[in-house]
Length: 261
View: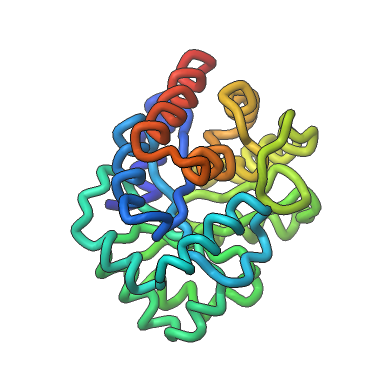
């Protein structure tokens, strides 16, 4: 299931896109959570592969990663569960470069493809150093999503958008992931820049990091093709929620976005 083709088709039909983040291995029923958010209206799901030094992530996702690692989560274990898991939406894994390098580019890309994973987000691998991994990922049919931040220059943003596959991930603020009381002022500027940079190619442009409430998601969707929501969902899981609570939260996000479109 191609990540980019699904997102393009839905975006072109007038739908604003919603991509929730779920930490892989967070409890024995984490895959049920992935299925539940897909059923609740997610257009794709970002599955985090827990890592001991998650430099992009704030305290909520760090806590979730640590909990998953304590439960024995491994990259291959998560992929084994995704394989044949019948999620119902394209899956993009989020991982750091260390596990990719340790496994080897070709081997890691092949493992993702074998598990039915459509895309990969590797936030600590910049566009100027991506060739080895991206070549292997392209050959395996795995789409590499690249990130842009508010301080990315226009010239570099053009390169990122040209090389990104699946969608381009606009980081709405400088800092780590986490819930915020309001959408960062930089977010609207970032969304507008992404849409301008992707106007010719039509690559879907999504905003993430700090998008925490339905209201914030609606606001972000006024300038971008959609949003990625992570910490607000993961907090509910850490507080004891399961698939039902995750579906209710994502369903609320979906309803708000659709109503505001």
